[in-house]
Amino acid sequence: MVPRPVSFERGEGEVVFAGDVEVRPYDGPPEGYRLTVSTDGVVIEAADEAGEFYARQTVRQLSGPAAFRAVPPSSVTLPVCVVEDHPRFAWRGCMIDVARHFLPKHDLLRYVDLLAAHKLNVLHLHLTDDQGWRFECKRYPRLHEVGGWRPSSRHGDRRHGGMTGRPHGGYYTQDDLRELVAYAARRHITVIPEIDVPGHSQAAVAAYPELGVEAGGIWTDWGVNPNALKADESTVDFYRHVFDELLDVFPGEVIGLGGDEAEGGDGRFVRRIAQHLVRRGRRPFGWDEVLDAGPLPVGTIVASWRGEDAGLRALERGHDVVMCPEEHVYLDYRQSDHPDEPIPVGTVTTLADVHAYEPKAADRVLGAQANLWTEHLDSARRLDYAAFPRLCAFAEVVWSPSPRDLDEFTRRLTGHHLPRLDALGVEYRPLTGPHPWQTLPLVPGHPR
Ligand code: TNX
Image (cartoon, rainbow, N blue to C red; front, side, top):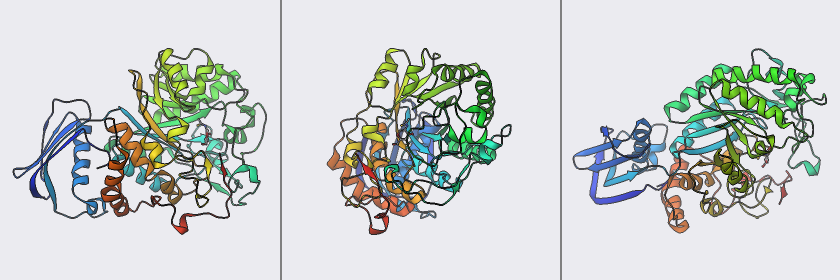
């Protein structure tokens, strides 16, 4: 199974299961459950609603790949067994960058289902960047009307200079996002929105030039843009209004403010927005560069992406930390050093590399998340290729106890889990390399 439960004891024989489950309370850890399949039937003891949900996911895993089809069989056979289970970390996340390439709403809903099937519980949505603004803003509509569209994009890595010449864009209405939040909540997934400030903000500057240190159009390049937001009072006020609308749509406690790669960015800007979120009763969540912004409000959560060292610094300062070190969990990075990898960027990050990741265990490490940056992932098909099966290994890292055995994982993956992904219609990367139609020989990457 992916992820592997804390304990799985197999009994003699199999039983027919047609959906009848008895649910009882469970005196175990949060999100935990005990699942008993016997000739008397199927019993789920669950610590909470999430525990019951995960027990049902496990029942689905035990039911065979057909249980993952849009119309599952009405009855299946289950092995007689007892499963005891609970997650290793409370924050089991995946970030999707919907700014560089817009992901249509139906694809995003599908990703919620895929995360839930892997017992992941946080979807971090990177909603804004230099190349696109995806959040409908009622007060400042040019943000999505102008900032949601770009005339062209880099074709592959920026160092090769080519452009697609094809306009790109899109945004989610506030109603779309409310629907997403509700859909995810039913699957015990919290959607954490991020509006990135004060760097990565060229889409907003294109819409409202007065926000920028320099005016300029929406960015059609990839990389780190030197033009950050102007750190004056009117810009802070503008963003307070934008974040207030965001808080209205996203009821969760944690709200992302970005803070990464802001060349010439002013730490005061990040602090002011963070303070505003705290005054509104929320917890700011920023990339690890926010540690250079000066003293942050208590309760700020830091995403450690430049290795885990930044996270350790954050812990020393009393912050909670989410680990997402680029050398282990950047799923936009190439999956092998084979020349057939489509648009190879970053360092080689194999399935085994992700599986071998051991997040630093400490009190204030809430968990970890895998990050899907989408400069080079312009569709759900490309996202599937980058995400799977590495996200299966990641799910195991954040759910299952260590130590983990790669061979045993690979056997479960090929024997059971890839057939489930096939049933779900996930276009994952085969373990032996891309299908011919998954290659992109004419789009240049830039391997590191
Ligand atoms: C760094 S990770 C970024 C992103 C890029 C990513 C590409 C982080 C906080 N910033 O803007 O998309 O690298 O891998």
